[in-house]
Each structure stands twice: as C-alpha cells, then as structure tokens.
Amino acid sequence: MTTINLTAPFLDEDLSLHRDLILHNMLPALQEPNDPGLNTALVQMANAVANQAAEAHTARLAREIEKEQPTMPTTKFNALYNNLKAYLNVTEDDSLPDLWFTLAASSKRQEFSVVREAPDAFSRTDLAFINIAPVPTPKLVSDLTTITFVSDHSDNLKTGIQPFVVMDGSEDYRLAVQDLAREYILLSEREFGLSYADLSHFKVPKELRGHPITFYELEKSLGMFGNLLQVVLGAAHPLTVQYRLFWSAFSRQYRNQMHFEIDIQCAMKPVHILRNIQLICLHWFQAQRSQIPPAQPQFLDILQRISLSLYHNPNLPPSLYQFVATRPGPTQKSVILDTGKSLGYDATTATGLSTLTGSLVSGSQQGSQQGTGSSRAGTFVKNPAVDPTLQSLLPTGIKITELVSSDAIPTGDDNTPFCLSYHIRGGCFSNFHRCNNHNKQLSTADKQTLSNWLVDQTAKLRKHISGN
Image (cartoon, rainbow, N blue to C red; front, side, top):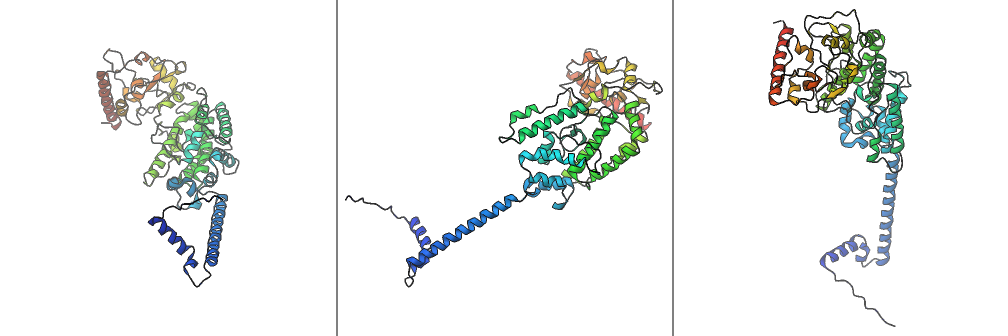
C-alpha cells in the first residue's frame, strides 16, 4: 500500500490567534480538564449551530412578513417625504390623501394605473366637481412619483400641478390621450418593462387642440382640474378649499356671464382663465418650497373682477398665442370703440380690454383698424432668436398695443418699420401686414433703437395712467 504524505500549512500568528478564539469561545469545554471534554464541546457546538439556525429562520420570517405589509409613503418616497408633506400641507402621516398610500403600496409598473384609476373613481362620487375624470399622461405620473409639484418657470405648462396638465380640450384630443394611456399601461405592466424607445410613441398629434377654446370646454377642464386637485392634494388642502369656492361660484352665480364674455363678447379666451389659475398654483407651491407662508389662493377673485369689469387678461407664453388669435368670435356691432388713438394692432393681443380707454376691443375689430384682415388665414411664426433683453423691457401686464398709442412705429437701419410682436414678444402671424420684417436679423443699432423706444413708451404710458 502506498502512503501519501500530507503536509499541513504553516501556522502564522494571525491564524493561531483566530484558532484560540474559536476554541475558547465556541468550545470552552476543551479547556476544562475536569469535564468530559470533547463530548461537552460538541454538544455546545451543536447548540450554537442550532441557535444560529433559529435566529436566521426568525430573521427570514420577519423579512417575509415585512414584504407582505404594504409599503408606506415614508419608505416609498424616502428623502422626498418631507417635500411631499410640505406640498400637501400636512404634518401627520395619517393626514395624507388616500392616493399616496395606494401609490406607495404599488409597484413601478402599477403607478400609471393607480394615478389613472384614482381620479376616475372620485369622479363617480357625490363630491366630484364634474363627472369626467382627467386622463393622466406619463409626464404627470412622473411628476407625482418624483414629487415635482411646481416648475421652475411660469411659462412651463407641462410640469407640476396646474390646469394645463389636465390635457382635455376637444373630444378628439381626449380620445387620443385615452388611447395612448391604454397603450402605456400595457407596455409598462409587461414583464420586461418599458424601454426608452417606447416613449417616442406617447405623443399626441399636434393638430389636435389640447386646451379649451370655448366656454363649455373651459367648464369641463376646470371641473376635471378640481377632481385632480382633491385626489392629489386632499379635500382640506388650501388650494382645494379655495378652488371649490371658485367652482361653486363659477357654476351657480357667474356661469351665464362667463359664457357671454368668452363666446359672445370675446373679451377673453379660456386660456386666460387657465393661465390665471396656473399662476396662483405656481406661486403657492413656490412659497411652500421656499419655506415661506403662502398667501391664500385667490381663485374667486378672478370671477369677481370679471363681473366688475376690472379683470385684466394675463400675459401668455408664446405656446398659447394660437389659442388667442386664431379663433375670433362674432363681431359685435354694438361695441363702441375709442378711435381717438390708433391702437397699432399687434397679433399677440388679439382680444381684450384696453387698459387706457376701458373699451372692449375684439380681435376682428382690431384687425380691421389696421387692415390686417382675420388671423385665421395666417399661421403663427415663432422668432427663434428673440432677444431676452428686449423681452425684459416690456413691463408685466402691459400689451404692445398700449405702448404704441399715436406714435410712429420705430424703423430699423433699412427704414423698414419693425414688427414689434415678432422681435419683442417672440412671435407673430404670417399674414400680419409687417410680416416682411420677420426675416430681418436685428443689428446692434436695431436692438438699441427698440430698447430706447420701449423705455420711452413705457414712461409715457405710466405718465398717462397716473394723470400727470
């Protein structure tokens, strides 16, 4: 028989120390000469192994039970949880709206379905503003799960909790968004998830209007936004409380007057009302984010100022110009215009009240004063290189038509009158009578001319308003 010589490894100091620790801690009976020794040591080792197995089993069972328990918002949103409580204006966890507990307990694939089903269920209750639920978009779901309640700029109409995210203007648009929502749910809940390439398919056709253009479409959008507010923010939230007062007054007291002002007189457009509500929500959330006590939301003040003929249409971002000037209402022959001064028609302010004269000016009548014709025949042209310095010189709440008065339109270095809307506001219509100036690249001298003109006309307007 051949024997094999086994060579044991050398014992260094660390290995010896580790061996002694095991012998003294795990097998202490080996060090006791009066005890049976090895048998006792083996029993202790067996007990130690059994205890470790029991502890591991208990820990594993605890983890399994914890997984079966619904995830709470504190765990789901983690570092963003304090921001969530600030935006929702709550201090206790139990005060959060039900949506956030359901959203916290859902998986990533179920988030879109949860955000879709919650407003739909609320719209069928007696507390609903209107029995129509808003159709969520992937962007809205992303904003909710990342606690993005407010955008960084007031002209961003796609981010945060505000009326322009309801995305329901015409029925065609609503059907298109519903189809996209169904496809998104099917893709997001599949086993291999939603890929980045899939996102390119979730875009609504541009030819469908996404915002209301009539009073009845505005009424529907306002009701759906109220449903979204109560589901997301809760019934006790300051924005929801004040918005419910606004909705009650809108539907009971001011409904006929609002229909007359929007669809008959064309004194304002639905996007003006939505813009005003958007700015109120924006300022409230920005104050909360800055840890400043927010002012009470004055939604009801919009209706009261309209009723008292004190309402001033807010400035609109360029993306909404098309909803102001492309759909002029019927001409009202009974409207008396102050023709003492030329208003210098500009395409970006197609309708509204003149703050200088108080006269009601409709888009079709303003166009007839300058011989521009209806804006329906033209398309909106955006200035890709608008100068932000010129934009900043235009005072907030002041229209370009109010700055023109009876003075001549400034001209460039080629003696061609500027299109003020295109170069200052950032866009104009292709059928405007100064559209030939749209292609002009402003020189340094041209920019200085426009800058001086804005400063001078603003000073004249303020002097005229003050009566000095």
